Length: 617
Image (cartoon, rainbow, N blue to C red; front, side, top):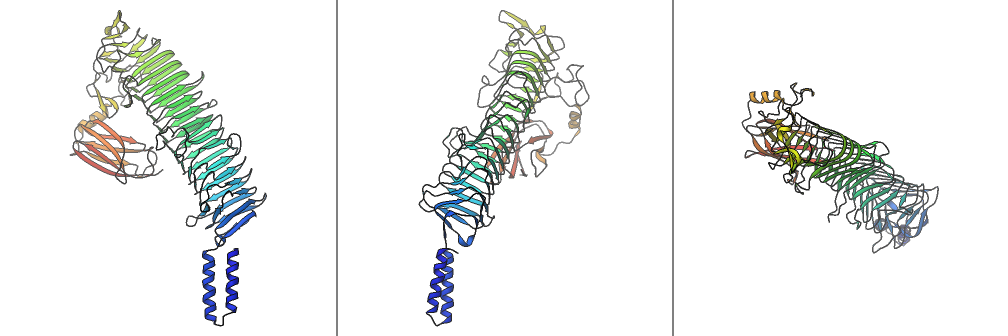
């Protein structure tokens, strides 16, 4: 019972003794008890432990207050704790807060307080907070080495540090766990060693003045799942990092936060990053980067990486030591790709295309000082620059050069590359296919639009010097969206290397990145096309990860498919391109958007179709 409650009850008893009327006694006592409850508070100082409950709330910290070693303080649901000017709480033992969804624990400073001394938790303490709201100036938690802290369904909001470490490198060797929590911090969280785990949480560092606001770990192990950051996560010098299904956004003022650096070893999957991603020093392990959307650059150094199902919008730069490798599968890279100083590079079923923010001169693919380079079933809608490659195979690719260049392949030592089953097209007729001598193996390719096969200005090599196995003709590419398919009358159909594996329709290999399916073509001729354009199906719905959208056209049309949120706001354009009559499908990962309900809109041939879809992450 608080001091004020005791005092009011004493007055009530004194007054009641002076009154003869029992009814007045009861009324006065009841009123005073209500009064005392409404204005009750407990002033605390010195040693504290045990339980603080709603009956004694709010608890006002008026002077030096601490939880002794070996003791525990538990804040129960409905408790509010306020700190006077320059006061704080030192925890040498343990501290817990057990709020509920309907009745949280509140930590605040008293009215008019500008400075306080935080909740200072000393080494190896156990601190667990559940359904707690802490809104305070300056740093909220000061952590000594080896602290173990868990926040579950909590809100932390501080003008300066939300978490501050006393060690030389920040929060040292602590184990921090965030679940379903919101952290709004005016300063970055800097850690050294230890481990940080976060799931279903939101971190906002937009008020931080640093160029790279966010979490900066020196040898800290990260495990981040289904979180959103306005800011970055940077891991330096060791540690193991796992990042799954998370979003990293730039600050509102446009600083290049939204970045992830994965050091030592780890993985990043199903994530959306508005800034850069860096991966390095995997200690001999292959680092998976799967199904991510990266709107900044991907920089890889001193490690082996497996990139699959990714979209990278500006620059993929890889520079590693000998003995390292990179694999790129089913990915889209827009802009510049630079692969340098590696033992092995494998590229399969990927698109390297111009970034609309660049011009065609600034977008290119460069491979240099590589022992073994293998490229299959990929599209290069830009210039290639290849040099110092010991062994290379380009097989079943479609290559379209920079329209302002006079040759499709630049660089030296291209003679050792095996070119088979590729399509080469120039967007600016004329010029040379190769900038120097022809490769030793150049067979079963389709070449169109070039005046010369290669050579120097005074010693040009005519096209008829190419092997007679090559096709010198328009490949008749049918662009379905971004996919370069072969038209039914293309000379590339069944013209590939007869020794190559057969196409999926069990016919001779076609030339180019995508084969022509005779069976599907025959089926399309026989089918009755729909009377109008429509979205025929969406599967699965709801979806988690990826979804396929099926649509039908009654004649060739320009198709635009857009995604809108439940409020009708445009989110992204999924498709913009020409499609032939018949049935089509497009895959959408939706990685850049949060869970919720969305509307898919398709416009084709003046008709508009809508379908609702639900994303669950």
